[in-house]
Amino acid sequence: MNKKILRHFNSYLVLLIVGVIMIFPLIWMIFASFKPNNEIFGNVNIFPSKINFDSYVSGWKGHGQLNFGVFLKNSIALVAPTVAFTVLSSTIVAYGFARFRFPFKKLLFSIMISTLILPNAVLIIPRYLLFRDLKWLDTYKTFTMPALFACTPFFIYMLIQFFRSIPFELDESAKIDGCNAFSILVRIMLPLCKPAIISAALFQAIWTWEDFFNSLIYINSVKKFTVSLALRMAMDTSEAANWSSILAMAVVSMLPCVLLFFSAQKYFVEGISTSGLKG
Amino acid sequence: MAHTIEIDKYRKLKKKNTSDYQYIGLLFITPWILGFLIFQLFPLLSSLYYSLTDYNMMKKPSFIGAYNYIQAFTRDKKFQNSLAVTFCYTAISVPLKLMVALGIALLLNMKARFIAFFRTLYYLPSILGASVAVAVLWRFLFTKQGYINSLLALVGITGPDWIGDTHYALFTISLLTVWQFGSSMVLFLAGLKNIPPELYEAARMDGANRIRTFFKITFPMLSPIIFFNLIMQLINGFQDFTPAMLITKGGPANATYLYGMLLYENAFSYFKMGYASALSWILFVIMIAITAILFKSSGTWTHYEDGGRGA
Image 1: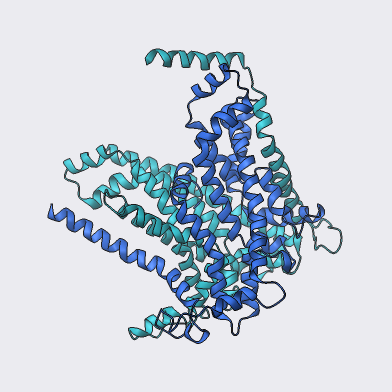
Image 2 (image 1 turned 180 degrees about the horizontal axis):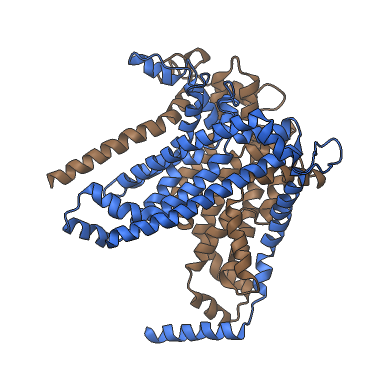
């Protein structure tokens, strides 16, 4: 018995040490964002000498005519429809794959699965040229349209897995009660799939919010910049002085993700373990 | 119970024989079919075409055969360097990340309190890790005057220039990748929960110690998930370059000039779309080759484990 406690004690000790190391950078970041500039570097004290909100004020104001609020609004304008479209299209497609037999289903399904490992690196250049020809560059259509057409197979797969766990008897009895395929989806499946749909929405929200590479390529005009692009711009242009205000805005840009994560962390963990995807 | 199963079987058999397709299913998957054709298949094919041209956005593309590919392998010094850097980066970061993820998952796989708390704690960096904010943070922490070196100075170590020194820069970037081990850990944890406890019971009866139990039970049972994680991490690792772009800008002296940066620069700084497309196909082929080799080796490896247990 003693040995068992001791073993657990050691495990806890390791878990705690690793946990502190893991979370420390974030803690440092939050405290450093309240520091005056001259305390950020070459200073071993993690606490600021006095709490100072100037960094948040000056960071929010930014340099040009645009303040950080504009970029936050842009990010929301990009993320909200992308998430809504992704959830809508992925659910419908997953329902189709999970519940019906139709010609070439096996082939189509394996194509869908193989696009899971299709690297973005190969697609980005031709997509850029395609979007240029469609006159979509520098608009959020570059994100929302692929979302509308279920272009993230990860979510389709995740939802298919979930649909499969729902017994067929429910469909059958609904059919006997006079439901058609569409009303079965809306009335029976959707309520049951809520956890999986929430997982998908959360993942897509955070990935789109944090996206840097695609926005960098597709969005050019500063007034349409998302928080990621704005942060990068701040980091590159004000190299010299405004470290604390950059950190402050980095904290602001992270805040929505952190809040989402803590308020719904069980959906993240469940989503990732049921689909068994995404490293 | 057995009766209903019989009926189910019969129903399935009947369905297959009469082949009454439910065409409405096709209607439901139509968005994906269109999306696949427009945003995946068409770009894939057009990229293959562009890779055989000299397209630079200024004038119409003209066909130049395999010239771009030959150019990459014979002339482009940056190409060879970036391939080497990318291999090095994945060779450091992927195994390290998976080992940490597995180690922590093993620790978390006990029936004790606060496990959910720790799981959340470790998972958080995976959620935030891809953001520009974290890249900013990393740059600040690891600069010469940064907090890491201040800490090292406390114990009398003069820390290196983590970002500006060619010997450390790639390692610093890899560390950021390893920091995000949480999602792999969650997968391992789910896998560990699925291992039947009877196996451990039996091992204990046979007097196997913990190390033996790990290698004879845990590792083989978990091997499909390890394998899956390995593939996904490698695929991501080969394409990854945003941290390098944001933290070190590929420097110093191209020490962190990852393949993705080479691709990005050729395409979107020099607008050499043809050449960049060829580069992307080279990457794609390398990734397919590595995945195929891994699949092959995993087959023999699993088989070996089975044989070992039987003997």
